Amino acid sequence: MNSESDSTLMQLVQAGDTAQLAVLFERHHVGLFRYLLALGRDRALAEDLVQEVFFRVIKYARTYDPKLAFPVWLYGMARNAYFDSHRKRRPERFAGDAGEIESSEPMPEEAIRQKQDVAFLREALAKLPEDKREVLVLSRYHDMRYEDIARVMRCEVGAVKVRVYRALKELREHFCELRGEKLYDV
Amino acid sequence: MTFEECRLLIPEYLAGQLPAAEKAAFEAQLETNAELRIELEELRAVWDGLKLLPEEEPSAELRARFYRRLSEVNRERRQSFRGEFAWWKPGLSGLVRQAAIAILLFGLGIFAGRMNWDSHTQAQDIAEMRTQVQSLRSIVALSLLDRQSATSRLEGVAWSSRVERPDSQLLAALLRALNHDANVNVRLSSLDALEKFSGNPEVRKAMVDSIPMQESPLVQIALIDVLVHARDNTALTELKKLTNDQDLNIAVRQRARWGVERLSAN
Image 1 (cartoon, each protein chain N blue to C red):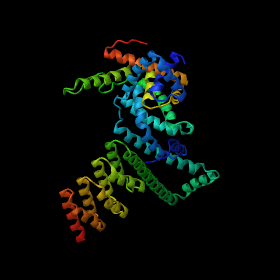
Image 2 (image 1 turned 90 degrees about the vertical axis):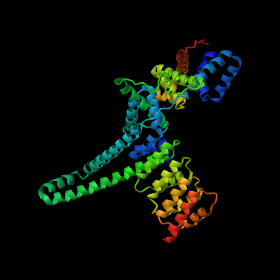
Image 3 (image 1 turned 120 degrees about the vertical axis):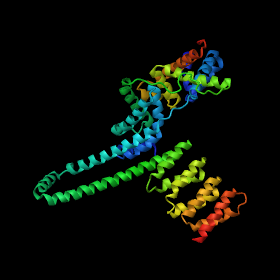
Image 4 (image 1 turned 45 degrees about the horizontal axis):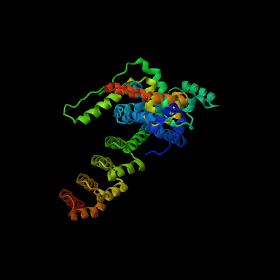
């Protein structure tokens, strides 16, 4: 396994060794795909954009600053690519969305409830406005610190802090609504 | 720290990303503030729940498309670099023009020379492209062999089979998979991939060394077959040990006996 850091590989790409992009692709394409899928909820679009973003890496390699974590630069570029293109297409729904119980075999009550909760949570996440869904996905699934999220989203760290909190609150509201529970706000 | 300020820290606290001082202040508030405790637990439920959502995987087509396009980009870059170099080189533009006039004047002879140059350049292009494709395949194979999922590792072995002359790093990764992979199918596939290189004495030696490491009868029999097929007499000692090992699967012992007979006859 190639153990060079992302930053070293990017410097090689900057110097014209584009074959190194393959290593960066292998390291980051799945995460990037999930981020773009969470944003646009469209598999085909997410895959197209992953490809597009990696070729933007070559095109804009000179603008990469090695002091910046590579994923932050990459996700920022992915975000731009997404906003450039996503409005042209219609979102598709995820397979298995919205509380489907696919198996015909009888399941224990607890397992059914858990499966339903997962489906409700997924639907609740889909109901969030794009900016809240994005900030939550970056924070929860990509373990990004607020400083890095702020760089990706080009906003203040304070704004990220407020947005993540509100996103989580709203997610819970949608989730409880889908479960038919009443909310007692504190 | 006010209650409102504390609430905003909940997600960072749940993510374990609060700096020590803020964490201590937040926990001090938790001790005394029941509302904050309730809200923390409510939000923790959805925060933890998010990790239960199944993770989506991109299709295999994405990787194939990416590598196709990367090869194209590399080829285009090489060609454009060569073009720029030939025409841009300072001080040579006059000579290039003269050469062009010479081509016109001397006709067929120069044309033939140019044809030779073209075919030489093309051959160079093809050789460079082949090296680059091989290197890309090797990178993909190594990366996939390192994955957690057995399906990905199998895919990695498949990619390695497409590398004509694997370097020591790829061979080592395949041998590591043969000896230590938790999945028997990955071990068997690695052996299949390595068989192509059984002409290499180091690979054969590693295969012989691998025999006592294997526990699966399937892999042991496959290893015996590969070594017998490669007519490697250095495997005799290990095979004889297998024939005498009473704890071993009977089919493996029989195959080892067969192997000893075949190799002794060589």
